[in-house]
Amino acid sequence: MRQAEVDAGARTGTTTEESAQLKALKKEVAELKRANEILMAAASFFAAEFDRPHTRS
Image 1 (tube, one colour):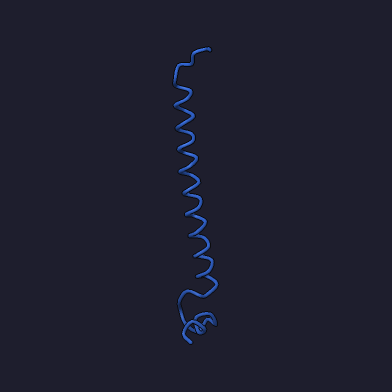
Image 2: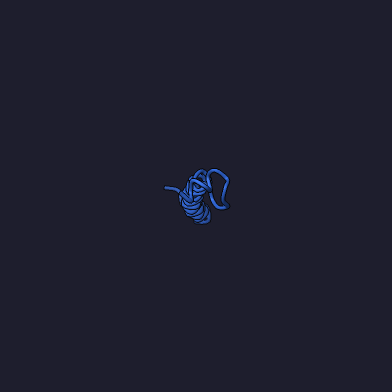
C-alpha cells in the first residue's frame, strides 16, 4: 500500500520506476567499469610490447 502511495505522489520516496532506473544504471556502471578495466589491461599489455626491443627473425 505504501509503495502505491509513493507511486501516486501522495508520499515522498523513491517510485517503482525510479527504483528500476537506478537498478539498471547501477548495472550499466558495473559493466562499464569492468570493460574499462579490461581495456586498461589491454592498453598496458600493448604498451609493454612497444617498449620491448624487437629482433628480426
